[in-house]
Length: 166
Image 1 (cartoon, rainbow, N blue to C red):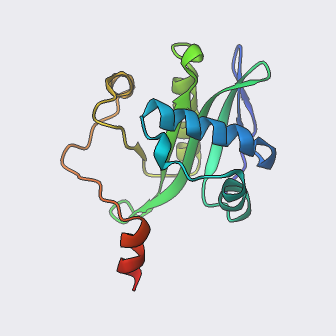
Image 2 (cartoon, rainbow, N blue to C red):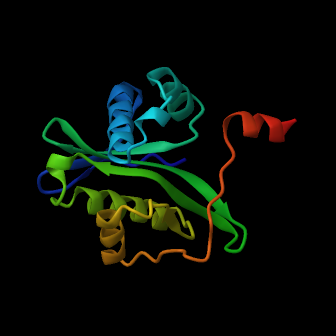
């Protein structure tokens, strides 16, 4: 994984998160879960995030900072497209605090991810969005994103995952 320097815009900075940002990352995860009415599903802890983000390095986080306040987050990881024969970036979470929305932070985070993808030769940048989240859908469409209506996402978790592994 390539480390990226900070990008400083007119009034804010986008930087890679570090281990000292774990509590901030968890607060964004909880805020996103609350927004999506899924707070009961959050089992992440600071310890788990330290392990999986910074020790095992299974995902990365960009933070948008205004002054000394973290206002937005993009949590992403690399996937692989067999058809393209190259890696891509999967954006797991994009979230901007309510009081900072409409100021360009979400777009700046996506642009930064797009630059990372292009610089690293990745074939695509992709993500999922809940069907009911029309403000986010409209935002993504305004950026030229194309919904993948012909694909259905599947998930196996918890006991079902353990049973499948047996």
